[in-house]
Length: 89
Image 1 (tube, rainbow, N blue to C red):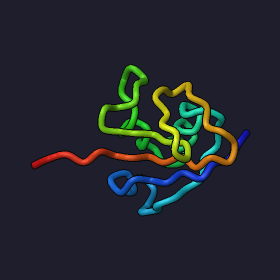
Image 2 (cartoon, rainbow, N blue to C red):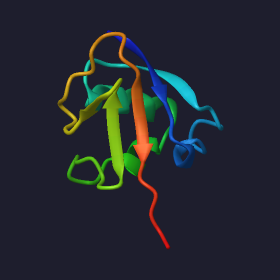
Image 3 (spheres, rainbow, N blue to C red):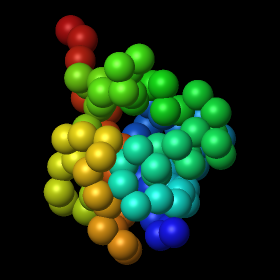
């Protein structure tokens, strides 16, 4: 199973004890997020809704390629970037 570096957005770092980057294993977005959730309980729910869809304010990137579905593959060696959109006024 491929191991990936995962860059954590600031709003999600409370789950990773403040770490900006962690490791996770998996070949697609679903497997990587499941592994992250095993290591950092609760982080997946902040990104994925009850229908297993990526929440509207979250973007997932494998290097520079946006992942639009949990079934999207993450190429071996790619860095997974977890991005949270900012909003407010």
